[in-house]
Image (cartoon, rainbow, N blue to C red; front, side, top):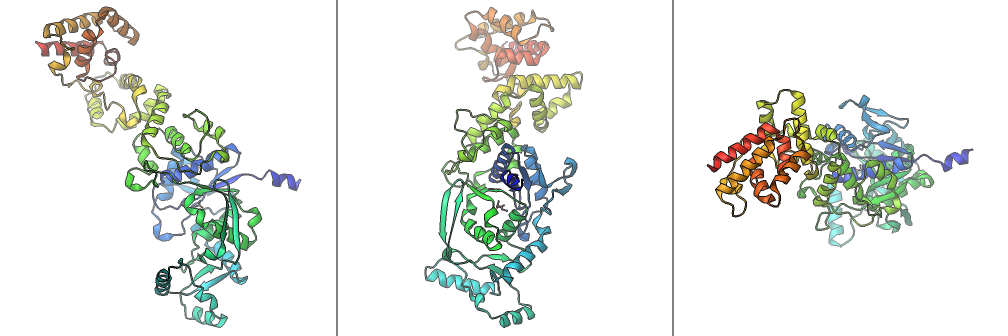
Length: 511
Ligand code: GLU
């Protein structure tokens, strides 16, 4: 019975950000990988906050991280989350709390004491000045920077004396002799000689643990089964393994999966200098969360099929550690835009409307249009915007682009240049004739018959072979632009009255 339980050990994965600012793309990739793995294996996604470096804490960062995870559709099963989904009320849920490291100081201090008692850790009283001098000497001798274990040689009496005199100290883990080898599920087997490892500080003079110790203690106590994290931590992994070992936890330690850096187009590590790297920036730019998730997920692994567009459920279904890459994925904004366009194309008009409206409402051209409010009521306004979206849906890469290239939908002040109305070598007279023809044709449709398919058919029938002659001036008359959705679509959105009055206006310009 007991054995069976052990075999079916629940998968528990933690996302463990430090609250030092906005969640960035790399962090979201880690969280997403955690989440896909956990959902695929019916495990738990845990949010743990690693705030042991008190100097770097940014107020409000925890809330922002939770907000961004929720925006991306990542649901927190355990740990730190919002109470009743109300933003800004943080609480901690689960049997392994607290989940915020600064609330666990006593626990860490106890475990550090254990290592001290067993001679596996030691107090270090070295001043920053001494350490700096040591480093400089090592540099001169071209040696790797490493603590010289000066304080390991202190006698118990000397230590007692220093403590009595209240000399500040840190606690270091004594790296044992030998070799450390382990298997990373992406990078494979890794082995290091312990003598290249520096005795890491595990408890700082302010009583706070360092990341190394807090992570090991928490991952053990919280029964974490897998650690997904950035490759920048790979070089610290041997220290962590030795710590697990020192506590007697090596056999049950979590599996390690390090993920390569996200790269820019020059195949260098993506950095802030390249523009947006925070998830909030992408949200504010109007990308649908499903598109960001689709794009980010594939930066870390390859589904090994032709499929490129995935919903979150499809990503969960396809996810497999075996498919994770060792080579860094390239953050290609053109690809993100393409993926985003595919997601928007698949949205229902109602969904698109709900998502695009907040962005539209920020734009002056839209605010003015709403203010002028020539439409009879709220319902009519909604219907009109939905029509615009129907026409634009296949052309949008992000919600912020709504209406941007087609402002003529929201303003009658369109700028018509007579030359733009004339098709190829057409004369003024011919252009006028064609515009009049379009007007008469469209006038034959009643308000009720003003449907896209009918508008298209009736105009094409009349144009016959000479499509350009009729449609080119019509487009210019309705939009004032050379590029726009088709004149049928534009006429359909504008409605009969506006369409006819814009043609009339163009005719008067040609007079
Ligand atoms: N707090 C660490 C970070 O933000 C977590 C690393 C880990 O997942 O172990 O990078």
